[in-house]
Image 1 (tube, helix red, strand yellow):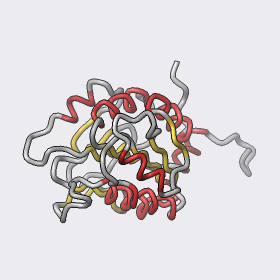
Image 2 (cartoon, rainbow, N blue to C red):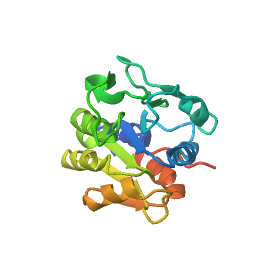
Image 3 (cartoon, rainbow, N blue to C red):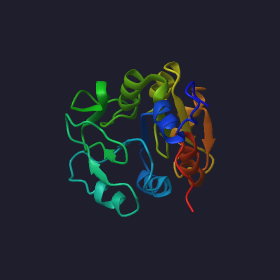
Image 4 (tube, rainbow, N blue to C red):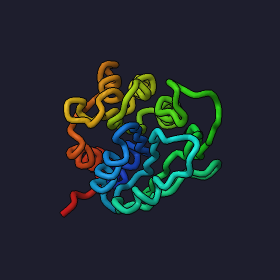
Amino acid sequence: MTATGQTPDPAATARERYEVLAVASSAGGIRGLAVLLAGLGADFPVPVVVVQHLTRTHRTFIAEVLARRSSLPVKLAEAGERIGAGQVYVAPPDRHLLIRAHGVTELSTTELVHFVRPSADLLFTSVADTYGPRALVCVLTGTGVDGATGVTRVKEARGTVLAEDPGSAEFDGMPSAAVATGAVDRVLPLEDLAAELRDLVGAAQST
């Protein structure tokens, strides 16, 4: 009960607790993202921002591919837009995606991080700096160690970190590196991550 005697709205409480979900993946990530987004449902109440390592020299159809599996609309992120609830924003090829004050996107062509651009580390660090304890991040399948520095920053900012179970991931490099930092709060198989994320943000259970 609140001071006024009214019962708090669970959805409003979730929005106050978390304001963004940032997800990162690399090898095997298209399938991983498709499974995750399909499970989030159409009523997921916070924006979802995604870094998937992509070939830098080719036009990508990742937004169209993921939109076929997602109940949420999916688009490539554009510079200077304000992210909104119920929308998935994917980093374009060869652009770092960062989220700045007031949820405004920034695209950058600064140097590669761990040989990749876009970088999970830069996205995660930006949401940690912008949202602090209201940041929720998730590391999926992938090779390499991108994301490990970022999840550490999220945990330092008192945000929440999830990772796909390296033992069941298609490629275990990225989730293993994240788990090794000690900053991951929950480690789950891919098929269980969406339900956990829905629970964390207070989304109604799917029927």
